Length: 359
Image (cartoon, rainbow, N blue to C red; front, side):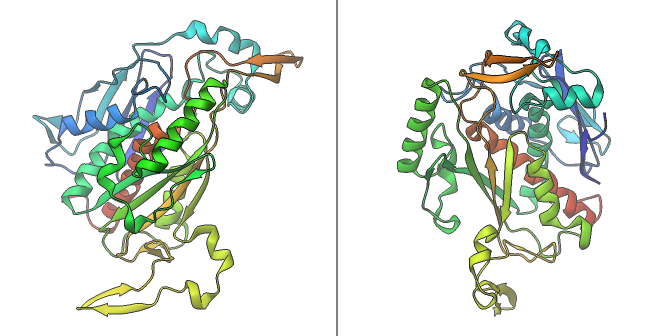
């Protein structure tokens, strides 16, 4: 199986299955002599882990990361960083029927047709459990970027048809983690949480949107043509399970605008070149221009629902399927640190491309 690595210089390779003994990763290209705050890494994992509120799956995983290489006395050595997170709360019996059928909108059918075999204990590599490894690598990348003055903030801006009406300029990022849905607007958050609870009670699921803002990215990060920063951010987001859409800057709203409205005019702000507007989302020609980078990521409703659905079994027979096991009714609250992580990995990787592999 190819495609288990992301990044060019700062590169993560993840491994493990949802119901195996452990998941983990190897981070290559991490700069040496950087003091890592291990507690901050654990805090990021705690934001992603299951069972953290009544809005999420009640699978209980401590998600305690164990490092095996690349860090000595909390300082990076510049060598590959190896780590694992043990799976401690598997209930594979909840998935005993999965070997007999293909779940609607899951990867069961495509994995089996591509590889001739699949992990029938809950999705294996296609499970969102894999993203815990990304959060570890992203937490390290976030710390390095923070030392360079770069800050990353992701938050839930929409669940179903409930959308907060605050723009990125009026959001208080300190409020993101003040509620279970991770929406930095109390009124919107309350409505979102009620909707998610209602959907769960119905045995159904619902989608949502995460907005990300990156502040103080240096000018000149990103490569022309095929390795554009915005293209790699899009790839990073689409590599996350359940992502169905990505837009940066003005996104699809640009369709409604004329060039005279959409163009970001330059001006000299006390010796610093800025733009009066930021429809470009901080990236022009695939390269950062120094303005805030911002984008939206759309997540579909979780595929596993506790409602009867039509499907097909491995013999090609029509069957009825009803979801079992422990699943999120809405993925976006737990996806916030995953989006943060993939953003950080992408930005740091491009930073190291633009500079050198040292700080």
